[in-house]
Amino acid sequence: VQLVESGGGAVQAGGSLRLVCTTSGGDFTLDALGWFRQFPGKEREFVAAIGWSGRTTRLADSVQGRFTISRDNSKKSVYLQMNSLKLEDTAVYYCAADGDHFRLPMEVSQYDYWGQGTSVTVSS
Image (cartoon, rainbow, N blue to C red):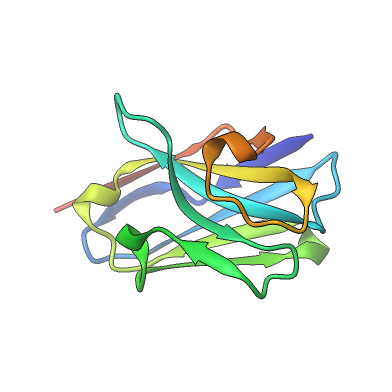
């Protein structure tokens, strides 16, 4: 199983980025997909998750109204649209897949598969 993130980079505050995560080697059409981020020296934290059908999402309070998560099961991909980026959004962002069906967890420990991470740097 592989999860590969792309779309990270450097952007000025107020700008936008779209992260893409494509999965392979596994079938996650019935599983939640999520995005997490990690600041230097900190624990990985929840950003967003989307249920298997795409109809249910969860977002961290810190990104509500700015980030949107979506998925395309036909492309085995999940997306994170990040708008109105702030300096404090600077982190490494990780894509994750839940190995259990029909749930929508927000905890790191509930996700079984992880990407390698993509770096997002927001500058003033």
